[in-house]
Length: 410
Image (cartoon, rainbow, N blue to C red):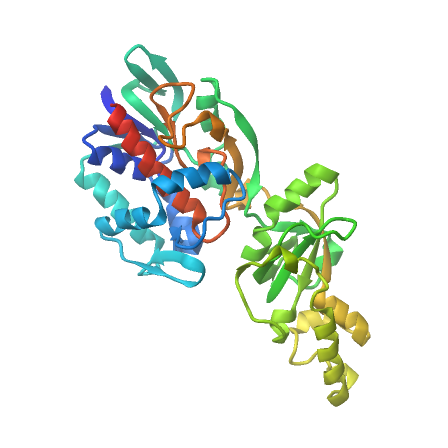
């Protein structure tokens, strides 16, 4: 069974790569281990699919490599690709791009529709067991018959997302060929904390500014602002998940998990509400302490002590802070301390940090520097972006580049 290009993985990067290769005349086969393609696309963005970001690129992991790929295939080209398929998109705050209908299914529908129209063969329930170089190209072995191609694109995804991710076996396809796997850990994942720190607060969603500090009180990079969710295990929400990678790095560096400080000034109306990263200069967890204290002292002039928190903070938090003096309340509301104990695992993470070493792939083509005709795209590479569409944008862009280059080689 000879093809020009075989794509391993029917996710965001894989489907895009297949279409990109087919448009250049290649005969393409897509092999997907699951029973259907695109399942992770449907789950992305809470079912809305934040497919790109028109703002400045933000990639904490593999940033230099990602930038080189995105220089060739910028967000405008990714959006042109989808618009040509019939997808209507809208841009929201922070440059986030969504389907106009607000449904992730629309993204998968246009991809699958184009796959069908172009006659691209897709085989599901087809896990790949081995990629083998041959004198005429590459052979892909499955549980059944082998498939041969001039080029193979590994777009198998990462380990994040529980059942939507893979168990690590897909990485072995390339490490068996001499590629290096950098250590993997969950990124964009909820934070776990000491039970005493979050006791009684589970279920609260509060606008806040979150800052990580080392055990000596030193801020660890810039803070994030947004809606934080208290859970029975710790803290979730986008602003908390953005800190997962940094928290893990601090644990690896010092042996201790950092402390999370929550500033509730946005809830009190003392600073503008904002979603995303703040400047690193705003990393002092006590930056709004004086303003919060002055605010409380003014309330104390007109309200009895037992009514000071009423109408200002949710009842669960008020119960937690009951009995504190004004100075104590000010510190609790401006820099609420939570001792972290970890990061939730891959099952709860949105993306994988780590993966195939980027230095072993040419960013201009995404072809392996070790195995001619072998390409990689998407989350299988050691690239991870911030929340806001950056990870899907890299998946689509890298799929487009790899698909084009694989077809040109074939």
